Image (tube, rainbow, N blue to C red):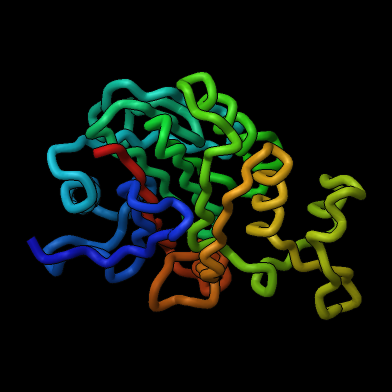
Amino acid sequence: MEPFEALTAKALGDVAHGFFGHGSTQKECPDQFGYGGDGDPAAIRKSRAEAVRWLVPDAKLAAPHQVHSPDVVTVDQAWEDNPVGRPVADALVTATPRIVLGIVTADCAPILFADHGAGVVGAAHAGWRGAHAGVIENTVSVMEALGANRSSIAAGIGPTIAQASYEVDRAFLDQFTDADAHHFKPAPMRSGLERWLFDLPGYCAARLVAAGIRKIENLERDTYRESDHFYSYRRATQLGEPNYGRQISMIGLQ
């Protein structure tokens, strides 16, 4: 099998993981990893399965139906990888070998977690809604319930829309507290409207620190600006493209 191309986080050590985007797959597989657009479900399923096989041979994929929630599912066996019928959640945790956890994103932050010593891993889809609602803290708590120690958990924040690309309005800003103000900075004013730039990966990192995670790595890759490498919902929407595509982030135990 030709190797896939995936980014990795040094913080996660030798735990099998990867952040897959544009150009990640073999030539015969499309590099679109998420259901929900206008892609062929069979082709998407094949791409996901091949990435799993490359990452952890003989493993099966567990990927949820994501809804920007704070909800976490503990996985002890995989399910059929179909567009419908998957558990509804935005984070997964497992201590079972040969299960690869998968999270799809297209600007939101994919966060992969691992406590290597305890043999527990996790994956979270942390858009601003999910992060604000507690998906990061909930993932850490569920990992602890499986035997992890939060002081030993490492976290890698994958390709995400960067602050310079994430312009928001007053209604967005007002959903956060004064304690979060340092994650916003003024954007150039257009048409007399106040706008701000939101630091999503920085906000996620701060939530990780507050949850007691000490080993954190932000890959600092911007999904919006790096169009040759990553899908971006915001970029596709602004360009009027019909489908924005999704990358996938995976982690599993050998």
